[in-house]
Image (cartoon, rainbow, N blue to C red):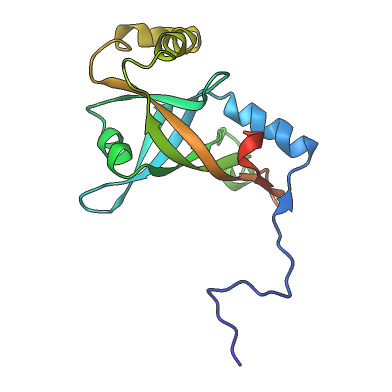
Amino acid sequence: MTPDPKRPDPKRPDPVQPANAEALALVHQLLALGHAALAWQDPETRTPGISRIAFARDPQVGLLTLVSGLAPHFRALRDRPDCALMLGNVGDKGDPLTHPRLMIRARASFVAPDDPARPGLRDRWLQRNPKAQVYIDLPDFAFVRLTPTSALLNGGFARAFHIAPEDL
């Protein structure tokens, strides 16, 4: 009987390890970068898209971004909230596949303009991103909370770790 290439071999151990203290420390460094690539699906064409976003780990609400209504991912996240984030810096030297990166699968939810938590979100966002003062209060901008459902840390060659949502 020929093995099915789409199914993992049940006899082969999972090469992705459970997170350890070193992996979690690297996760927190990547979460502090302040930017991420956001993958989303166009609601009309169902084709994938990707955008560079400002990103923060807010102490009150968790993972967060601020999105303009003009951005294609605004409507995409409203209509199809499943998304993914990639955090990491490639750097100038060496093989880019050896640099650490964190992939987070998430579900997007928009923070209502009249949400009582919004003024605090706004203040904390501006502490991290002072240049956002120019556009943060425009009516088409919205905070989007990104609730993790799973994550995978690739810390370099042969260093892959499952990351639990609560560890983000």
